[in-house]
Amino acid sequence: MPRPRLPVPPGTTYGHLTVIREAEPRARGWGAMERVMLVRCGCGEVREVYLKNLRSGQTVSCGHYGRGHLWRGTKSTTTDAA
Image (cartoon, rainbow, N blue to C red; front, side, top):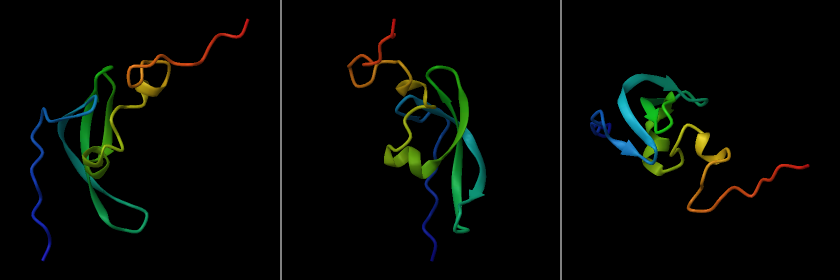
């Protein structure tokens, strides 16, 4: 018996991502169908991400957060080479 699908209402937030709506399910590499959410990041980027990755905390932003932005309260360690 399959597990019941838990609803994910629009506006639900996972890290910097806010759910807009549920997208069409996608087949993973091994053929299993996975639920996909259309989300908006805090920076404004809109992406589709697997619900499983949102709920587990594996995906918390569109990727902008690790590129020169503050991460867990510390500044980026990259410096300009002169």
